Image 1 (tube, rainbow, N blue to C red):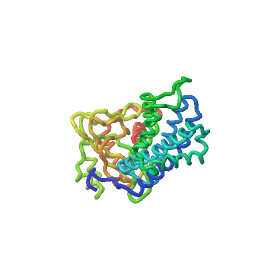
Image 2: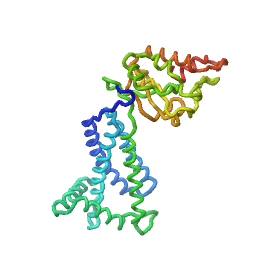
Image 3: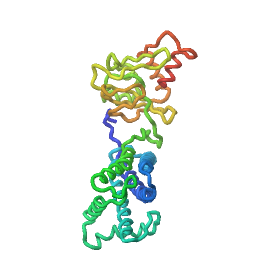
Image 4: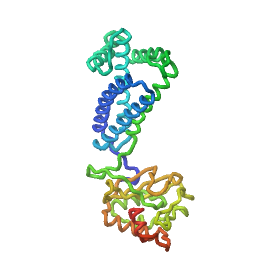
Length: 342
């Protein structure tokens, strides 16, 4: 491990599976979406349907990242962008095919799957059979429907078309596929070394002066927790204290420092693990206790639960000023333990 510069594995195979599964699921969902949008007459309900479509894609992407152990968000985003292109191609070709058939006076329902597949096949093979650029033909069809429109708003006899229809389509795209991209960039957690176990960081309250790479490497190799215990805090506003109810108080902004180091105890659900993690955060971005930290993070560092608990007690003793008045029903130490996980 090189300090905070550890690179996450690409997991090309997992990303390929992510692309294929999301593409296929997205095409199926697009068919259902088009069918529902064709029969629902209320715009508010249509918006909820679009949000539901996007929500399903988000959950699918997030869940697959976890199952496939994809920790590199860059490869996940690339896979989902490619899947979005594929999904939209099939989605619009289904839409074009059904409406071209309706323009020729055929009574076609989006829920009649054999008909939809037949017209979809026609729309896909037509440009290849006629020597037409398929990309140019796709956008030509898109412009035809943009200029003509095929649905009205609020019982208006005039269909929605042109710029306004383009805005509607853009909004629909952002709602549905923006959520899929959010799923791709959302961290599923930290994969513990040599396991299939995912963990989340539970940050300790202390903001330290930035730990150097050699310190982190020594901590990982020799488990010398004194490196953390003896590391100075980042500045005057890094001093932690508790109020009378035992809640930990810490300033949101650290003066006199450009970056700070934070220590997180990794938890699998509510269960503490044997690992900690060191992160480096811009001082101006430090948020309240247990907030998300933005910045670089080390690989999980194995210390063992017993050593981690000893580290927490040593840090609490050194850095937290506790009031002399105890909250009713609990000792101050109990409250600090509960709030910090210390």
